[in-house]
Image (cartoon, rainbow, N blue to C red):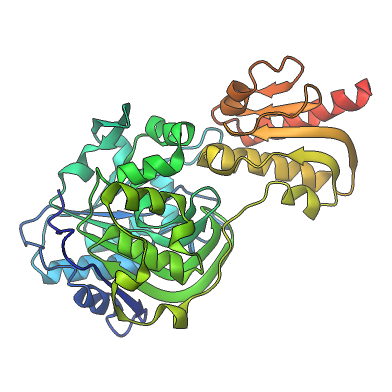
Length: 399
């Protein structure tokens, strides 16, 4: 349970990052982030790692930077802390050989923990505690609930389903895989907010060395060199959202959390220290239009219903890549009025020439007898690509 009193006026620090000037120490001092820290505390640092990717990709803006974590561990040790663990539950995606160990290595965090001699744990291998939220059962990592001092270190990023992925969203990495998927099926925004009432970090540090546009794993990273720190998770997220040019009131899970906790999304009520938001903000887009793939390749006759928050990271990655591969090979082609559905939300608008991708789309459209259906939760990239190619050939031959 957090030692932070909600009666306190939340203070949030916004500091320009400079590796030579102890920027992180300044941010933590400004928000009194270590005020309740005790040297004997079991400290858990929860970064944002998401998943691993191919060696040719850089993790900038996708994962928490090792530089911030190194500075943080050293500051904790300066306070006499010895029981320090870095823990994350990277997403395992079917059909992509991305074990947690590779995700830790790809992010650079595995090498960092060896260098600093700090324990690194995969929360997927740890015990979970069954927790009820809105009369539904979910499983939260026991280590996150039992830490004496939990430090949440997300990345500054916009997100194609959650609008922003900051402190509250980063706690989703403390769930087991089943619970992560269930969030999307039951209502992503509401459950992110609810989770924020179950896991309460003592300190939130948003790593804004890089900002990521249209996350969670896009290539659109921007060097911003910012650090946001607060003992109040909502205040940190509000400032992070505003820094990316997004009104906190427009972020559904922030609205939900504010409602649950009796708060207001009023930046004017946050005591700010350091930089001014308007002087360092950068407008970043969050929407990842699925139909943009066809427009980019000059393809006509295919409509992809926007899944919004009903598609999880699994299908959001594997189906997206499989589709992209097919569209890249068929640039400028005109197809015969075909509809694609992925995620739990989209309901097919017709009863033929419809392709359903994955378990969620099939569940939503279970009464659609003439649709082409691809099983999987999620389907693999190769299966997605072959499914599109074979289905489109059958549609063409039947016309």
